[in-house]
Structures are given as structure tokens and as C-alpha cells.
Amino acid sequence: MSVPPHHDDRPQQPPKHQIRALHTDTTVTVYQAYRPALGLPAARDGRFPAAWKRERMTWIKPSFLWMMYRCGWGLKADQETVLAVEITREGFEWALRHACLSHYVRGIHPDQATWQRELKRSPARVQWDPERSLRLGPLPYRSLQLGLAGEASRRYADEWTVGIRDVTPLAHEIHALVRDGDLERAGRLLPEERPYPVGNGLLGQLTY
Image 1 (cartoon, rainbow, N blue to C red):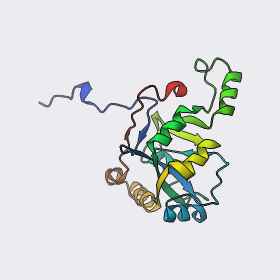
Image 2: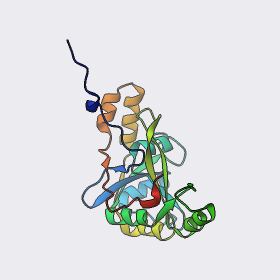
Image 3: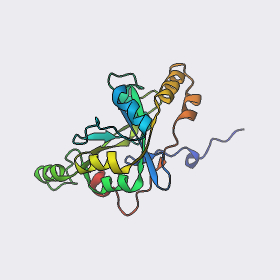
Image 4: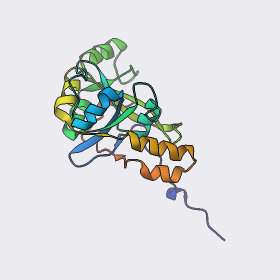
């Protein structure tokens, strides 16, 4: 007679707030999607072109599937080119240390006015959105979005970025497998996103 697995053998669900990313000892990969006129030159040259507006806020996502949810597998207008942007861990962590939450949370901020002042002076902001499954449905734990503005945006484009790849073909290949119901093969093609080490209280007041 078979014995049911002990409950401790079941896969553990990630914590509600956890950064999961493709990363090395020195870099972390984040995703963005752009119109081809901007995305293709960025991938070709490995850096953002002059047309990339450094004064505007830009949002980076370490989760490939959250990016697929946002850009519709690279099929939404002006998001047809999906980029994997490899940046320095030093830059990524600088942004986290200088970030605040994108919305007011009672108990984290003394009051709404304090949060608004912090938001105004912070060059980065953090937003936690439900992680996504291969079918892009919401999961019960969260995925990081990191908004960069001002100094952070300029540093991202001109200092932190060490490489840019066009992963649109990968997005389309995985999407085709999902449409065909072959989730096992689709899952094997996903980037290996492991928990990102956030020692020394790196997330600080960025979780709730």
C-alpha cells in the first residue's frame, strides 16, 4: 500500500515578498519591453540609445513571467520587443537602498504626508504585484517591480547596464507551447530565477 507523502515533502510556496531573479555573482537580469524602433537598437548595441528618455521613470522587472503578463508575450502595441537587461548587482542594490514603496502602507509609514515626502525625494520605488503562472494567472505570492527615476534612471542606462539581449523569440516560443498545452516543455525554457540574496536588511521598509 502506498504511503501519502509527508506534508513537509510538498513544494514550499515562496514568501509573500521575495526577489527572484536570474543572477550571477556580479549581475542580475531584469526585463523590459519596447517598440521595435527602440528595443532593437538597444539589443544590437548592448546599451540604450540616445532616444531612450533618461529623464522619465522606467520600470524593471526581474520576473520573466510578470513581464510576459505585462506585454502579452510581446504582442501588445509598443511592447513588441522584449529585452533581458543584465545590470550590475551593485546598481540593483543601490536602487533598492534608495527606494520607497510606491503606495502608502499604514504601519510602515508614520502617516501619508511622510510617505509622500519620501516618495518625492526617492529616485526609486518598489511595487509588489502578484507573480504569474505560465498561463499568466495570478499566484498567491508577489513579484518585484522596481521603478527608476532621475539619478537612478540615468545610472541604469549609462552605468549599471552591462548587456542587453532580445528575448522576444524566447517569449514567442514559450507562448506557443503554453497555447498547445505543453506546460512542461514551456517551463523548462523559462529563465532560472532563484531567490536573490537580500542580506543586511536590504528590503528594509519595502515589504508589508
